[in-house]
Length: 406
Image 1 (cartoon, rainbow, N blue to C red):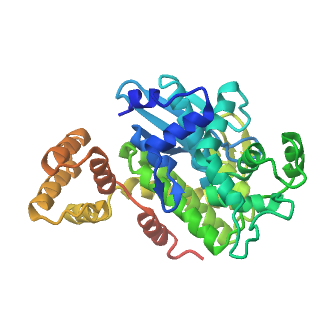
Image 2 (cartoon, rainbow, N blue to C red):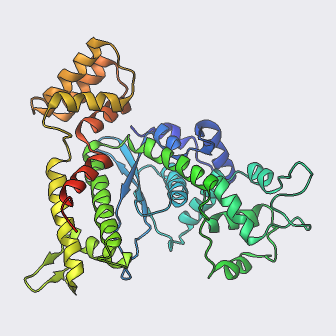
Image 3 (cartoon, helix red, strand yellow):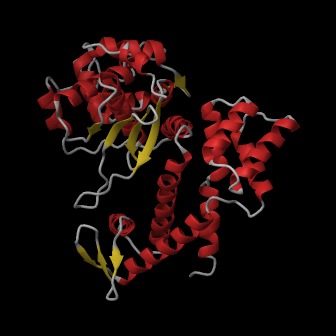
C-alpha cells in the first residue's frame, strides 16, 4: 500500500535536501550499490516493466511512468523493459520524485520531456544516486603512491574517465558528466553545459564490458529482479513471458542466419504482437494501418514466434501435470525456510486448492497470510512461483519446438 504520509514528509523544494532526506530515511545498499528499487518498495510502490513500443525507425521508446491506483491504494513505477540497467535506475529515481511531489497524479517521462517538473526530477535523481560528498571522494581518489586515479596533473577528469565514475554509481554517462560539471567543474576542456553537449554529442560512450563491470552490472540487475517479485502475478506474467519469447525467436533467427539485422526482427515482431495480421499474400497489416511486405525469412520468424507463443501461453503456468510437483517447486523457489511438515502441508493444501480452481487468488493469499504468518510480499512471491514460469520453462518449450529443425 502506498505510504502517502511518509512520502509527503520527504518533499522539499531544495533537490539536494530532498535527496538527502530520502537517502537518510530509506536509502539501503545491496551488493555495493544504492538500491533505488528497495527504496521504492519500502514506500509502498511496486516496480513494473512494460514495452512502450517502437518509433518509426524501429527503436525502442524509453518511457517511464508513475501510476497511482486509488481503487486498491497502490502505486506503480513502470519502466521500459528495453532500457539499460543504469537507465532503469535513473528513471526510477525520476519517477520517485514525481511520486513524492504529487502522489495523486499520473506522471510520464520521456527523454525529450523538458518540462519544469521533469527537470527538477532529473536534478533530484542525480543528487540521490550521486551524493556530492561520495562523488567528490570517488573522483579525487588516489593510489598508494599518492597519484590521482582519474585526474590529470591539473586535477581535471577526462571525458573517457567519466565512464569509470558512471560505472561506479550505476548511472547513464551523460547524467554522470553533467553532475560532475555541476559539482566539481573540473572536466578537461569543458567550461559549460554547452561545451559538454558539443563534446559528447556524437561520441559513443557505451560501457566497456570487463569482468568487474559485468559483476557490477549483474549486481544492479539483481536489485531490479528482487524488486519485481512485488508485482501482482497476473500483471507480470504476460510482460515477462512476452520478453522471453521474443528473445528466443530473435536469437534463433540471428544464429541460424535467417535474419542478419536485429532491428528488422524487433520491428516485425513488435508489429505482429501488437495486433498485426498477415494476409494470404504475406503482407503484415499493422494496427496503425501500415502495410509491410514481408520477406520469406521474416515470415519464418513470425511463424516461429506464433507457434512458440501459443505453446508457452497454453502451458507456461505449469512445469508438470502433477500438482504436487508444482507446489514443491514453488516452495523451493520461495526460499523462506519452510521446513516444518505442518507448514508444508498448509502450503500444499492452499496451493493445491488454488491450482484446482477451488479457491480464488485473493482467497489463497489470505489463507497463506493467516495460516503461515507470511508477509504480503512473501505471499505474492510464493503465488508467483506457483503460477509462474521462468526462462528454464520457456527454453524447454523452445528445445522441443526446434528439436528437429535444421
